[in-house]
Image 1 (cartoon, rainbow, N blue to C red):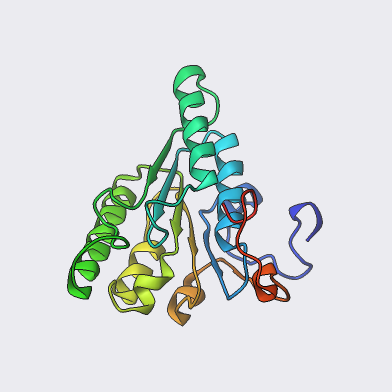
Image 2: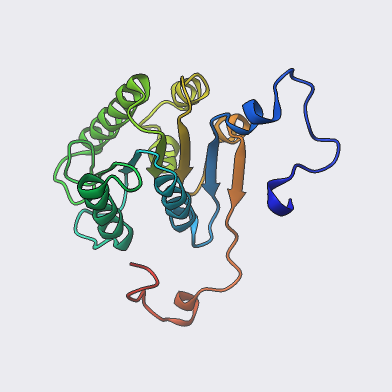
Length: 206
């Protein structure tokens, strides 16, 4: 679709103008076994920030001890917004801020409860329309493990008010979420340096 033009014959007869249809909120899912799901989501978030959208990132699986390059960059962009008004506000919610489970002591029941609380916080933010753009990073895993109810997630995301865009990343995206999404991309691995015994490296994995 060059220049964002829909394919011929795909424009719905929904009574909406081109502008109204263009401004509808998007639910995107990045799934599959390949590398780049989160990277693509943060690329979308960067575009959103540039348009002045407030951005909220919720990371569910990556360890709190990992140095996430995107986090440092977006925190800097958030500071730029506070000091100059450029772009949008940025909030980054990660491990150790109330709803994470990796690197924590406790049983699976404890971890499941923490994940569920994380989801409840996201629901509160969506109900309050806190952000214009949400990244729910690695959120498919608590869905896969049964820690968060898939049907509830689909209902909340489908019925969100306003113009809130949401992108969900992670392997094993449930069928119901895929069906509800407007945009679904599957990352398929063809080759990876780790297949040849090479470890992750700076500037590539983090």
